Length: 230
Image 1 (cartoon, one colour):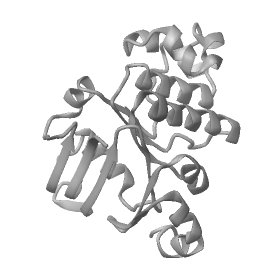
Image 2: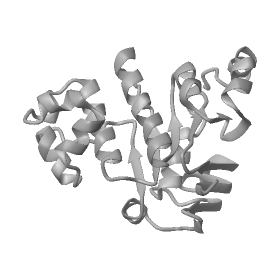
Image 3: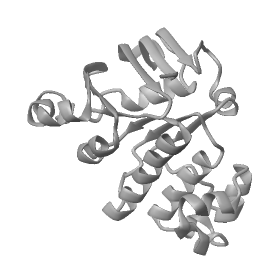
Image 4: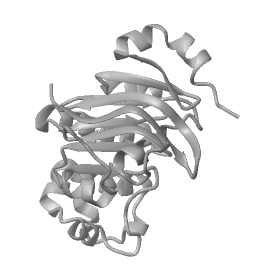
């Protein structure tokens, strides 16, 4: 397996305050890795640091086999795709214009999500939440990334839309070898598509294993790690 992105002893946060402490994780080519945990556990901070938006306070980030301190835009040029929890679309532009700005063809986007074809001329701000999230993911995957970091794809969306989004992520890993690190609030959905799972709590990785192993102990995991933090 080729490791595409890796954290080694990573600590990260804001200013001098560490939110994430000494974590180790990795994502290989062609696999979906789920990062789950309660609100405030440090999941988004982890993604921001792996993406290059935040500088580590300690430890290392490796991207495509090399130690990196490159900013996010440089990592994106070299094969990183990042879908934030806030939908990454420009609301005043049409769907087609959003795709053009991302250098993604309508054909590529509609191949991923056929539902986008009927709204290509519509302002992104007038699209439904599901259509906006399809557009966000199409913009990321349409650029043929090697690594996809996805933060809360399902937030506020209907179950049928969530299934479509996660199925598309799973296909990108299997068919194109994309390495995916997925933060997902719906634990069951995450376990259904993941190859491996990291459970995060209080800024640290508390558990790492297969979806089957995590599912067997799900009640215990939820009681110990997935309760909402104060």
